[in-house]
Length: 398
Ligand code: HEM
Image 1: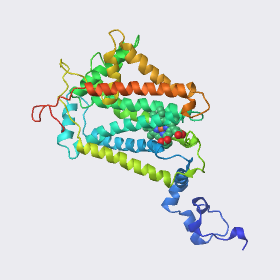
Image 2 (image 1 turned 135 degrees about the vertical axis):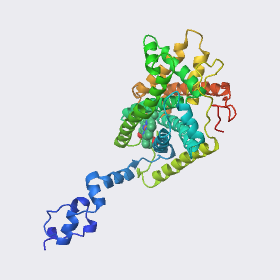
Image 3 (image 1 turned 45 degrees about the horizontal axis):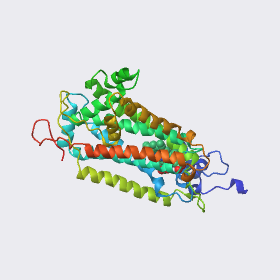
């Protein structure tokens, strides 16, 4: 029999070859196998799954890539957990000024594992912000935003804003004193923007005051708009990371690129285990509190925004009257624009920090300003007012 017409071992055939029913020389048994591929082969033919997995495992990692490059995948894992715990909470949560507080109280004290799942969600958000900042700083100091990764960075900057949006909208949902007053102060920032300030404030709050429409709008953004944006942006980000591959260290190291599997995958797995383990530990050891029910008439309440907005809040507090716009608009606007246009502002060929001095110095100045202001905010923040359990609507989770 000529070589070309010899029947081949069906176990060694690629799915495409197995499904090729027009081949000459196939026996009846083979024909059945070919016309009825296994479910796995059938799916593979349609989805190209095994090729995708192979390509992912073979993704080339330049020499010198290591622990710092595990943060992106850590973020993905933490976000996946955040979606799951968020879905679980949404099954018990009710977004209305009359019901939000009671539903969170119910989750915290009655629903089996409710306090734990709420803890996972609350601590998950903090660890995600920490991982996000570290990932961004890693990319910044390595100069990995440079050609051809400008768009990878740009999409990342939008992701950053979306994640802060999640935190800001989520903070209001328990509708306790802390949530209410932080949102009053946070949304007031919008009003300081010239010309569009008041209409913008009305749009965000759904009226002049923080009230039932504010809660509905924040919930809609938190569970619909922001997740849709995040999934879309993450898809583009990951596509771009794959398209341009990971940048090596600033000083190229000797050695051939290694495939992602096994070494880098192993490092990723360890970091993900530590990250998820940390969130679980925090959720168990420091369950989230619930303060008194929101009271819009409260007079002596000190607003306490989430820790990652404290820097901005402190900046606002130190501004003399009439200059608030510097803290609310000029500085955050300049930092955001600087981040957006960074790859085009820093046009030097080299990725080495020593050859990008003005960018690095500016970056460190911004980090120090935010860091010091946040620290000042943490030190100035009064302890939460959590009355003892059993006193009507005021209950602590601790
Ligand atoms: C949900 C948030 C994010 C996820 C899931 C994510 C995911 C990833 C992954 C998996 C990688 C490759 C591995 C690594 O370098 O760690 C990566 C690289 C990168 N990310 Fe992100 N990222 C996120 C946010 C951001 C942000 C906020 C920025 C910048 C503002 C950013 C900019 C970049 C850049 C420029 C690269 C390429 C780095 C290189 O080639 O060395 N990412 N990201």
